[in-house]
Length: 322
Ligand code: AHG
Ligand code: MN
Ligand code: MN
Image (cartoon, rainbow, N blue to C red; front, top):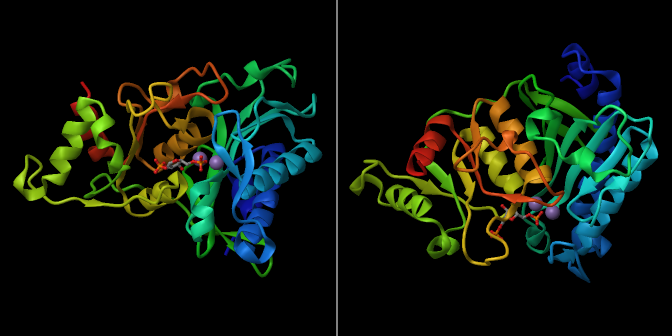
């Protein structure tokens, strides 16, 4: 099985970008180990702190953020970083050419139940002449990403990675500490009969999503004329991985549950990287009204509605939004 660096070199990926991806993965290998230790290393449970988004931080949120931050900044390969667990962007090496946005631990409500969690990352080039401390260097649409990926810490540790030449899976060989290519080109099937949504929010959705999900649930007695299955992992990384493996539609739509927070998922380090992975595998990623990767961000922790997955099913869902 082939290792990550030669695969990316053959794609014509710049050496500096490969080194940066390997740096992110060095942190993820350690996170994989720490998450796997679970209760043995005292990393479960919450801290007494909240992040800038008002979410209680799990001990693992803090630990994984620190690991990624330290390793990335020490490497010299990043001009700046943005993280779910950092209030502001953090300046790095002024001479570096790339910036990284990351969700150090996605699905952190799953940590204490030994369920799926992962790390999501998005890499862009820093604008020419940009200053590391200037947060506006992150205000670029997702279509500018030069690489995006996640590492899923499941029964095996799997990396999904794209550098704009398809989406590939690598599996961590924990004996040797190397990510080995295990699927060259992941393709999201165009058709699906599986959807993922937190249905407990149903009464708070907008009418378009209410109508769409009602029609799925009506199954062969409704307008769709066939039955649909539902899955919800409560970690986008787990749900998107299933969609990449066997198709499906995943959505976290706009809702009115909390008027101050109409959307849940963050554009820079959740929606954008997942959108690139899904599009590179032949799927679609939209907010309901626009392509996710076309959005011009205006804040580091900006949130967006997300509808992504199998092409035909996402298009059907979008037709309810017209
Ligand atoms: P995080 O743990 O990084 O804050 O992200 C959790 C996100 C996402 O991964 C998941 O799809 C969603 O929150 C789950 O939301 P519910 O708690 O509403 O199910
Ligand atoms: Mn997350
Ligand atoms: Mn997180």
